[in-house]
Every structure is written in C-alpha cells, then in structure tokens.
Image 1 (cartoon, rainbow, N blue to C red):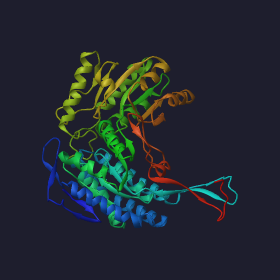
Image 2: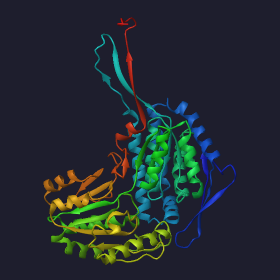
Image 3: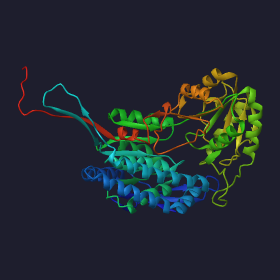
Length: 483
C-alpha cells in the first residue's frame, strides 16, 4: 500500500521524494510505503490551509453540512478498504475496523448537524439604546494530530469538528497508519471539500519532532488538538504554551471498572471482556483495572478468565474472525512482560494468559494486584488487565481514584442509586453505570481529567473548542462620555 501527502486536494510525494516504511509488527514485511514529509512540506500545508480559511470561514452552514453528510457516505463505502488497511498496518480485527468506520460515519453526520448550532446570545446592557451580543467565529488553521489505535474515528473527530466550525485543518497522520488515514482524507475530497480546507501530512518517525515543532510554531496555526500518550501530550502542551496557543488533549488512561458486591456478575464479566480485550486493549479507554468487591471476586475472576480463554487470536490479515491480533509493535511485548514479572514477584497471580512473544500476546488477566506493583499504576495498552480486590464501597472508590489518569470508567451494581453515588465520586471524564468503559457516542462530550488531558471532543462541547467567542455592541451614534 502507499500513502502520499494531500495538499490542495492533490496527492503528491514529499518535496524531496523521501519515503518511510510501515512494517508488520510480526513478519516485519513492508505494509505501507508513505511520503516522508519535511518541514518545507509542513509549511506548505499550513499556508494552503491559511489561504483556504479566508473563503471557508464564510461558507454557508448548508455547504458545510452537505460536505460532511457526503463524507459519511464516502467513508462507509470504503469499509472493505479500511478493514484491509487496518489489519495490515495496525493488526486490527474486522470487528474493530468496521466499528471504527461506523463510529466515524455517525460522527460526520452528528458534526453536520452542528452547522446551524454555532450560536451566540444577546446580553442585557445598562446602556440605553445599545445592543450587546456575542458571536462565535472560526479560529483559523487547526493542527490535528491523531494516533493509530482508533485511526478512522479519531481522525474523523479531529477533522470534522474544526471544519464544521469554519476552520481549516492540517491533519498530521500517524506514522503507524498512514494508508488508513489517507483513506479518511480521500473520503472528504470525494465529498467536495474545497482545496486547502483539509491538508494531510505524513512524516518519518525520526522527523516527527522537527515537523511538529514547525507546525505548532507557524503563526497561522491557532489551535492544536492531540490524541495520544500523556508523555507526548505534555510536550505538545508545553510547546503550544510558548506560542500562547490553546490545546485540546485526549491522553492516556487506566480506566477502572468497579464491580460492587451486588453486581450482576455475568453482565459485569461481559463488559470486562469487551472493555479489556477489544483491539488487544490498545484503546485509550480500555478497562485496565477491575476493582471488584472481595465477596464476589472469586466468582467474577473464574468466569472472566473462562471467557477470556475463549477469545479467538491470530493474524487479522489471514483470519477476519480473530479478536486478539498482534500489538502494534514487538516492543510492547517486552514492556508488558516486565510488568507481569514485577507483579508476580510481588504476590500477584495469573488468572489466565501469560507472557508475550514479541507483538503476540494472549488475553491475560493478572489477579491480586496491589499498590507497589508497577502494573497497578502504569498504563498497559495491551491485551492484559488487572484485578484489584477491595472490601466495601469506600475502598472501591478510593482504589478507582488511585491513579494519575481520569478518562473513562464503569460501575456495576443492582442498586442503581448506590451505583450512581459511586459514579459521582469517580474522577473521570465519563462513568458508565452497568456499562463498559469503552463507549463513545458522537453527541456526548468525551475527554479526561488529571493526566488524561483537558477539553472535550463530541457533542456541543466542540463548538467552544474550535471557535472564538467575541463580544459585540451596537451603540447609539451620539453618546455622552464623562471625559
């Protein structure tokens, strides 16, 4: 497969003709050869977007809506291509790839509905004869940086919301999924998006720091939205702060699923399997900690382990039905093996699964995890989850909050009033009572607290993220001033 730069709606190679390769994490075969854009390419992309902004900012709501609705259809029509590209580039199952396209198409349609919801308000004023009001206006060029793990839906939200608010976008694709991200950009071009409104950059991994620095520093770039690790998000926020540019950051997570003593164990197990092992646990809101009351812990773990063992594993390029595919890089296995060894030496027990062989790892559950074990605190981002046994509601809440992260969470309990009380105490951007930690709907605000970032994607919250609020008054032609 190949991936090019997209500037002014034209696919082209990098200026110097440089390319880089995305290789399969298990076979090491070349999967995608992509354009290795340079700082010069990045500047060209921003300047194209800056020029397009002068026109696009004045586009009618109906035009923005029309483009996004057509893009949703174009995206869905590419579902087979997305399944093929995601299986090869990032080891995604057909289930995860198809789910990505479904979510992304819904997101485009939801974004289209916001076209006429970008509104200000009138404000009471003490000035006789004056009109006081606010308006929301586009910001300018938005730099959108997204990762490889949910490549379709994360790209869709990083593109659609700025565009519907009248901005233009420089979309910096992930080095791990360049072809997948190019398919998203192609859908928008097919939908009739004018040249320059969306420009896509790819770069070699070693060139990322200087390319991203150039993009952030460019005076035409007014805001940055980034989805990825907390470590990189902190760097981007610091760089943006030196230029006084606002960020929207959706970062890492260590999402807890709290299982109270009155929970429906079978339903909690279903949510735990889905949340822990969908796409090998490589989702920012994957269930990485299961906080279960000790009175039902044995039953829960036994049933959870039995379900995890049944999950089909393999290579999604050869078996579309597999659930557990390879991780994105063989280095992930080395990192996770070290976490397992540390936990086992400190008293944890393997309920099922075991060590990784490079990028290949079975569905793994580590039971009896306690503070002091590295896996208790560190984000795993793989097909592995932990069980922390607690006694009572207060300890469950304390353990759920005993993390630097605060992205997503879930609470299971038959007493919904009590479960809701627990939900209100958990420091996360989203809490799902009797549901999985892995959930997303385009009409609902999504984002984190603490080290999981700040700002919100989705819903009406994005209007604030991608517009400027301006106060305007219309005053009498003749006035008296005290000075």
